[in-house]
Image 1 (cartoon, one colour):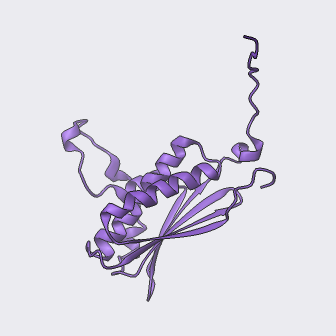
Image 2 (image 1 turned 135 degrees about the horizontal axis):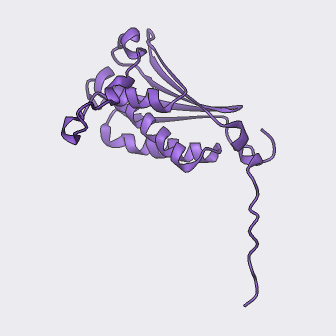
Length: 169
């Protein structure tokens, strides 16, 4: 990227493992997406993905215990944005975490009452992100999400406004 390059390439954020702290990381993710040249709707979608991944760390790796930390690392590389969610809790089964969960988004009855209230986070992430991968570690677990940017919409290559303002009064 040249010209209107984002002022960052890697940032780290850390919160206590409390669900009420998660929306802040979601808002940070949204702002980073906008700064990286993603459209606002994409920023909102990526915000949801980060919130879902962090919620999973808190609810599953830490079983809701607020005495731990969850870290969000954001990396901006040429043409893609990478979000890594790190925790040091109980590892999940990588085969289960990395399986295709998008079927959880299907509602065959067409009835709102049949939409489950839980268990759709990984499906949402897999639907929105270009790739995601869970990697358990001996000290820390990582859930990586990658979103590629349409190279036609890099910040320094966006079309200029053509509408002229009439300054006459």
